[in-house]
Length: 421
Image 1 (cartoon, rainbow, N blue to C red):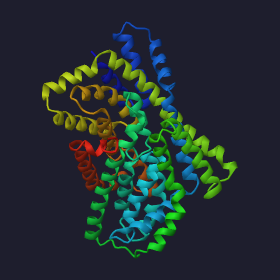
Image 2: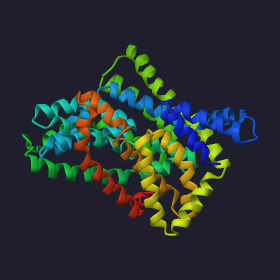
Image 3: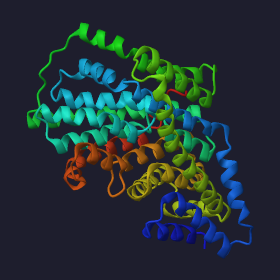
Image 4: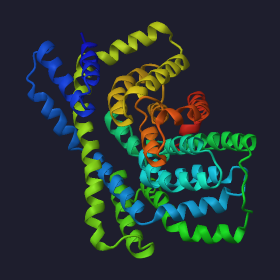
């Protein structure tokens, strides 16, 4: 009967009930029908989960990203990336990839990265002779490293939901994120050479140095946050608060991208986004409590061990399952639902919990460009003013590159754990 809660959840999704409500309703219906427990437990689980110190990092990360975006950081990053890689074949396409990586390391969100940079770079690429659908697909794909490159909102959600170290998971995603970026860059160069996308600039060290100095205040933020965590100066939550204050000071007094009077509007927009994320956290906590109490993780463990006792077979099977879930759920609820289900099973197979967390995050990254729910597709569709069905054919090769990077992450745990060790 434990599987019935998943049936209820899918039924609500089919009826177009919002995910945050579907999670709570499916938990409530299951408890009323099959559990002899007061439904007050649902509200208790929701409140106790949200009332967690580590989750304070979420609104701080979101506000920091909003302040950096409003502060004019996008153009500084793009100029630096252009000086660093713009002279290669397909230079502007590589600029998009590197800019997305750098911006993701400040915003912590793949969707925010696609929205902030897509409105600037997609039109610029089209003016330079790049195909609009290719440009849109590249922006959607390059932005998916947001949940992997630290700091990451999704990493905080997963770490809190399954009980692993937030700091360890943030750091563990760095090298896998860079590998995914490298796969995208190699593929982009190959496509650019084949299609004749050339660069019209030459490398200049003086220009690189100048743009680096202009962007350095923005580039320092992730190093300050991660460095502060691992030097013991502050906790991950405090690091998010420091990043928020740093973004405010840099945006106001160095880049001067906004004035004090504009801060309330930035906080309002960030607050709406943070509220939506925390609402999903709350209802998914009740959902996870019910499935855990009903023994669904144990059932899955028995199922997987029945298939094979081989660790790699489990990891690849779990990755395929996560990719399928990512087709139909946004990354935040998918992580909060699947994390507590699969993490105990991974422990049964002897998988390092941090390594498994990186696999989950990488799989959810790919979900951002997987139809029909892939949010990055919708974002770039709006920014580029192109229908999604025109963009999807160009996504295929980038999807393959992301899958290759996921396979490497699964096969070589050291990629995730080397910095921790």
